[in-house]
Image (tube, rainbow, N blue to C red; front, side, top):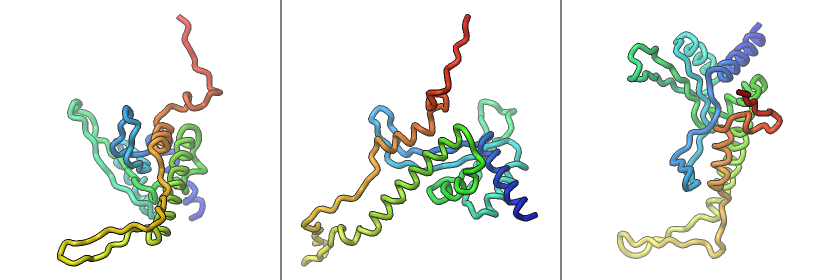
Length: 195
C-alpha cells in the first residue's frame, strides 16, 4: 500500500507541475540586447489559489526532503481577486531532486524544459567539480611581505584555465525554457485560420 501511495504522490505532483506549474530558470542580470546573463538558477514553481492543494503539495515535497518555500501573490489592481500561493523549489540540488522523482510522469513541453534544466545542471556541476578539484593546483599564492598591508599575489608560471559556461550557452538554455513547444518542434504545423 505504501508503494502504491508513493507512486500516486509522484503522479499527483507531476500533474500539478504540468497543469499549474513551470520548469525553467531564474536569470540574474539577463540582458537580451547585450546577450549577457550572469547566473542561471533552475527553478520549479507550482501556483494556485486553493490553499488545500498547496498544503498537500508542500506536504509531499517535505516527505521527499525537497526544499521549497511558499510566496503569496495579490494583484493590487484587482482587490476582489483571490490570494495566489506559489511553491518555489529554487536551486540546483532541489530542482535535480524534484525532477528526478517526477521526470517519468511528465510529457510534452514540460518534459523538454526538464531536459534542458537537467542538462544545464549536469554541465554546471561538472564545471564546479572540476574547479573545486583543481583550485589548489591553479590558485594564486599569497606571500606576506614586510609591513602590515604588504601582500603579494603570485600566480603559477603556467596559467591554468578553468572551464566556464559561456553566455551563449546560458542564454540558449534560458530561451529553451521560454519558447513555445510549437516553435521548438518543426513537425507541428502552424494552423492559420482562413478568413
